[in-house]
Length: 149
Picture 1 (cartoon, rainbow, N blue to C red):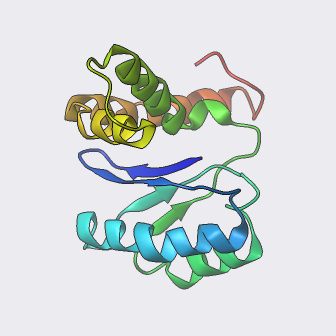
Picture 2: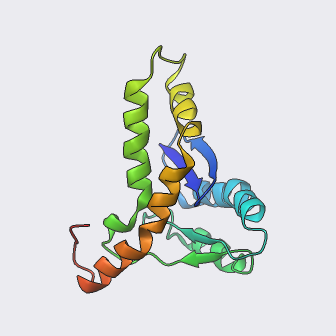
């Protein structure tokens, strides 16, 4: 499993998890990785963090941590049943495509992912982030039902 974070212009760390994600493991990622990323790229406190409704993301410890750090950045509450709003899926698809095109192959799968992650063109991230308003409008029009976005 891989955890990642990005914004309109910056890629954050790509973290490989060698075990199942739990609320406590996710809390460690939030405090060790997310907090430093957000404080660097959104030092004004105006950054907005978005995650889906995976069980570790909505765990009591993760929810409490996000509430305690609400002055550092905002947390976008993910609507239920709305996977089409997740730009991370688009990023992962592009990452897999970039991995398939690599030649020669890197030494390890993580090296391969890390190399491809670092080579994303900034314009790609900007396009995805800018698509969020259209995705959200589509979601609202569908009243929470799946959309064709």
